[in-house]
Length: 208
Image (cartoon, rainbow, N blue to C red; front, side, top):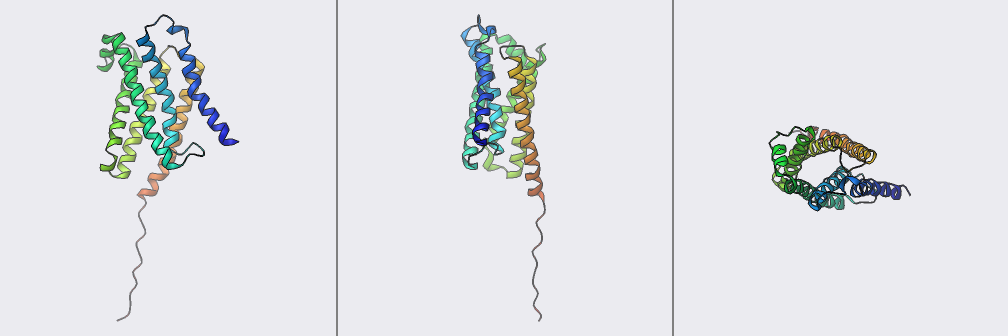
């Protein structure tokens, strides 16, 4: 029963903000490209909730190996959503996107969005080189980039007065932050255990 409740709550947390944004009157007179780009950003924020839960084993009944596989798939979906979000805005208003990428935009939410975007791309790139890095170094690097994505995305979303409902947006951002904080707490102990020196093996001596 507890597992069903958790999955139902997660489904609601993922779908309700997207549905509210998709039916917002703010989008009534917008171009289709702008609507797709805007909704892609909302979907990306929703997918961001899944990533720390999958990485930290926060979903009941999901084996660790399956969770890691889904984490990679959701990560690819997140990068796609970010690309569609920026691409839609580019096709709608190229000068605004250029100003945002060059950190010349007068709106503060643009800078945070760009930071989150580059961090997401960097996290995906680091994931492709996982086998070439030390496990601990890869874990710390990927986690740090993921936290940058979370922080930048939350600030970016909260500063925008757009199609997302205020209550649903704040609730989703709080859930994303809580899931990320939980993962950091878990990884803190994991890193501590990995760095703990192994006890020296006892050597037996035989009398001559």
